Structure formats: C-alpha cells, structure tokens
Amino acid sequence: MTNLKKYALVPTAIHQLRDGNDDPMFADGPDGKPDESKPMNVHVFGPGTKVYAKAKAAQANRNMDRYKKKGKSDLTAEDQTKDTADFLAAVTDRFENIEVDELTDKALHLAVYSDLELCFIPAQLDKLLSDTANFTKASQAA
Image (cartoon, rainbow, N blue to C red; front, side, top):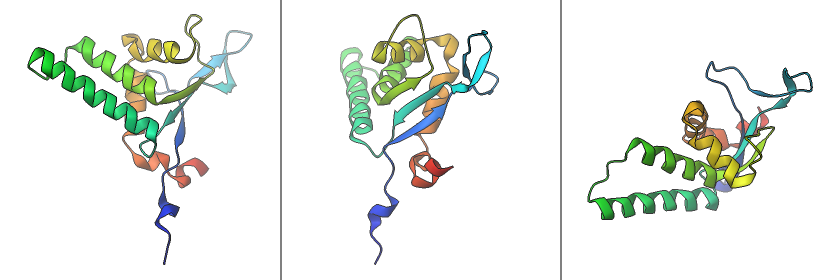
C-alpha cells in the first residue's frame, strides 16, 4: 500500500518574473543595471492550500454579487482587471526584489497586478496557478 499523501501538492511556488520579451527580470544594482543576484520573484500559494481556496471562493462570490446587481455576468475590462488583481493579491505570499513607489504588502501586489502596462505579470501567474504540476515536490527540486 502507498500513502496517497506522498503525492500531495506543496503549498507555495516561486516564480521569477519575465518581462514583455520573455526575458528574466532582475532588480537594478547600484550601477542601475540588472543585478542577476536579485531575481524579481513572486511567491504564491497554490491550488492545494486554504489560502487559494478562500481566494477562489471570494472571486466566485464577487461574480455572483455582480450578477445579482446587474442581472448579467459580463465583466467590463476594468472589472476583469480588478477581479484578477484581487485574486492574485489574495494568493500572493510575498514579492522579492520588486518595488513600486513605496508601497508594501497587499497595496504593492494590487498596484502591480492592476497596472495594464504590466499585464504580462498577471498572465504569467495565471498560467503558473492553472498547472498543478508547478506545485509538486518535483517542480520544487528543479
């Protein structure tokens, strides 16, 4: 007999952000050039966690509330951006080497995820979160 728990997902994954050209992103060093010892990483809670389940439920509830108010489920572009930003901020554990103005924590997460000029960041995280293989012990060892 094999204990099924050995296949359980790990709670978090680390993703190094990539820019619009799909190049890895690094924080600037003192010389103003990218410092490859400072990757711009996002730590996110995955599908096997209560944090993720709570964020998904909150997203579903927002959609239901919108439907009840407006009588339709169509999202405007602004609603979609806000909804995605709210969900991603809820599942983000922390950022590494990422700054916007002097924001911290959830305000920083929302600022990054809501910025249309940084739309490639939420897209990367949506892709990461949609594949449970990114939350396996094997993916963490790679």
